[in-house]
Every structure is written in C-alpha cells, then in structure tokens.
Image 1 (tube, helix red, strand yellow):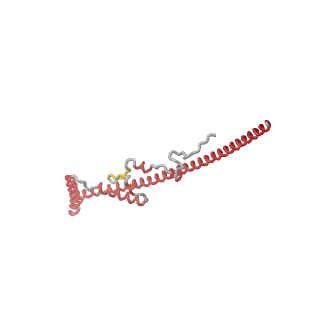
Image 2 (spheres, one colour):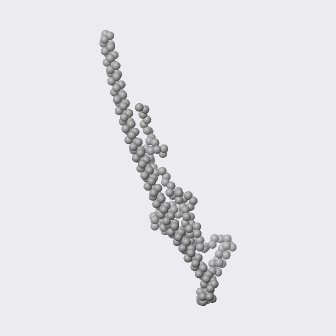
Image 3 (cartoon, one colour):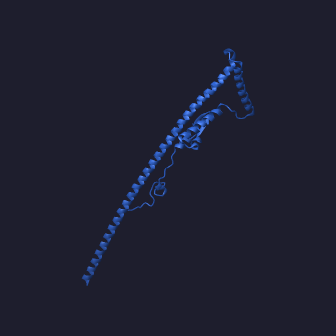
Length: 216
C-alpha cells in the first residue's frame, strides 16, 4: 500500500515537472516571438523616421530654391527700378536745361517755353498738394507701381503663389525687400507627418504606442 502511494506521488511529481517544463518552453517561445515582434516594430519605426527626415530635407531644399529664385527676381527688379529712376531724373534735368539754356544753344522759343511750362506745372501741383496736406503723385508712385508690376509678373512666370510672396515683401521707392522675419518664416518647415503618424503609429514624442514590455 505504501509502495503504491509512493509510486503515485512519483508519477504526480513527474507529471507536474513535465507540465512546468512545457509551460517554461511555451513562455520562452512567446517571449522570443514578442522580442521578434518588437524588433520588427523598431525597424519599421526607424524606417518611418528616416522617411520623415528625408521628406523634411526635401521640403527644406524646395523652400530654399523657391526663396532664392524670388530673391533673384527682387534683385533684377531693384536694378530696373534704379535705372528707371535715373532715366526720369535725367529727363527732368534735360527739361530744365532746355528752359535755362535756351538763349545759349539757340533752341526754338516754343520748345524752350514748353520745357519751362512743364516744370512750372509740376512745381505748382506739388505746392498745392502740400498746402492741402494730401498725398502727391511723383517718382515714388511711378517706381512703386513699376516694382509691383514687375514682382507680380515675375511671380506668375515662376509659377509661385502671388499672395504667399507678395505679402512677405515690402515696396519702398521702387525697392523690393523682405519684411521682418518673413524670409525665415518662408524657409521654416513644420514637422512632416507620415501617414503612419497620422494613424497613430508614431506619436509626437516618437515612441510606439502600446509598446510591449517584457521582463525576462
């Protein structure tokens, strides 16, 4: 009887030992699968981060190229405005010279008086507008209008958004320049989100959601 009891105890112990062994093997298998799954997830996340970095780099390069092309347009427009200003200035000087040197160079009286009349009318107009304290039409209006026309036409030729760049540029006496901090704003790139991030695979902090933690 006692021998039979010992035999049963030994069989039970062996069975329990086998069950523990199977449980340990199953746990080890699940643990290995979990680690492999985490490794695959980490590889996928790293690939997505690399895609995000590449997208950001491409976007930055595209923005820089856009801004550089607009800056080239600004330089050309400013040079043209400066040339136009010189032409208008020398035209006024020539008209004044016609009236002043009429007798010396022997110009026809009608031509001389015409030049003088133009200068008188210009001076009278500006005097009246000054007394009225109202804006005057002059070189600045012409140069600003010329620069604005050249800017808009140039942006259209480049295929760029007019409002996007026109609102970032100041026009002063025919000279185009970036408004304060606008150039930096146009160059700035917001963090590009991949489709996986939108779906919640990569949160804003860069860690995977629901990451499995296993203590071996």
